[in-house]
Image (cartoon, rainbow, N blue to C red; front, side, top):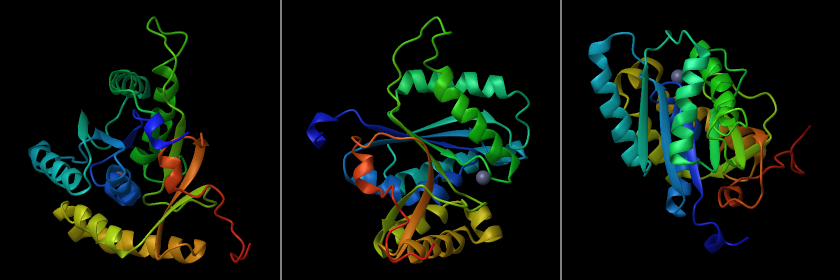
Length: 239
Ligand SMILES: [Zn+2]
């Protein structure tokens, strides 16, 4: 199917905290936007324990989104480390999905050791089902064709897909991460993303950098699928 036949592709990243979207998907998101694919981010928590920091963090998230050419940002407004009910979060996320109709969803991978990351992986997966469940009164066909899971703090053991890229895209990804000044000072986010990206790029050998994903579900006719390699164990890579 060609580009013109898929005008409604919409990539939605579900981020536990503002900065996870840029760290895990900041390369592929900017490339998708450059290809004319609609991109959005749903931030589940504000990533802050102190409420007076929330407006600052949201402004930083909007600045990072602007750098990555993300079209829309949504804030569910949960406090970091205080998601008490997975069902409440999944239901709220399902409502957002029904409203904005993603065709491709990017979630944290489930083996993330950070508890918020792990929970959002589980809750996000549940919401992709719940949003279009036959058990819901408003059941309708799901537009979601592909769900990929990205890495943040815990590297994926055996990636099922990689997006490869060069320095120009890494520089923009780093600039987006540097919007999060407190986190960038504390964890050197830009350097960490560059290091992980270089490791992935070296392992898969298609470009200097790469972002790695697990595949939860996949359809090869999306426009995003043109940007990724779903067979990353290519010849030349030692098994
Ligand atoms: Zn996080």
